[in-house]
Image (cartoon, rainbow, N blue to C red; front, side, top):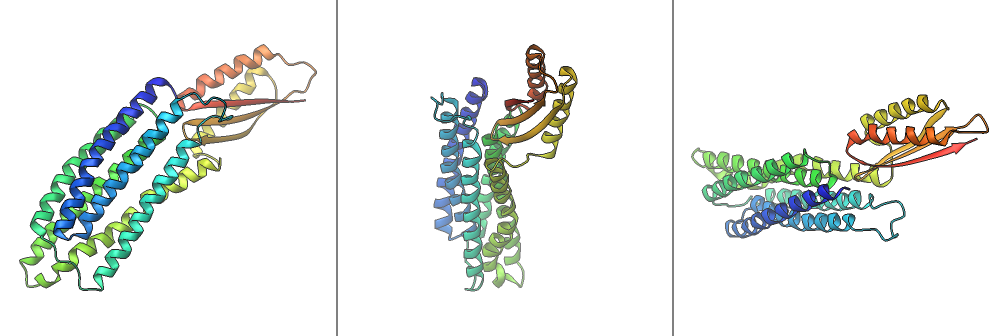
Length: 297
């Protein structure tokens, strides 16, 4: 990872941590005072997001330091490992909240001050929306798995706040109708609906990072691009060449190429030139290329 990307990554993660701390504190206090399961969940989620952001920040700082020989094949594995932890923790929170909401539904619902809850939800929508917009825009300027995961966290938090606000607004309208007695079920019902929706994002993060950690086949677009460029490189060295393996691990792209030499001599200067051209072509993927070329006679 280049120094500029690492610096930008640290700045964005620091901003995210400071913003998440404010929402965590506010959500926990307001949720406890109002007795709202959804708002408490929002506060807990923000608190966990803060802790996970600090974990990402620590990982970013560690990755940018010299490895001193401890990581013989680079530090790329640290990034998917951190994302696995983040995805697993968020998934656990969502599942626990779902269980709590279902329990509340069967125990008579939850009484909540709906007007104040809706106002708090609106403030959260504005704040979380800004955090999501800022981090998502910054992540477009450079490639970083940690920043992309951070953007997804804020996306979930923003959508959660929108759902909470709309839900409490609907519950307030319900109190003005003959069905006001059912308003106590608004809070756990919103939590149930949001849980089913939010399971997808952390599950996707967890699965994708696990695939990277196990060095499975990357996205089809990345694999096809590498395969095409390797085939083009084979034309320059006039030797049979084969893509033996490709994997994306964090911000590193691992490419293993076999050159089948059908004669006793091989022009190494020509091979090195083709190697540089391949690196230049694959630089468009904005990943740190780890290229291994094996010569087989």
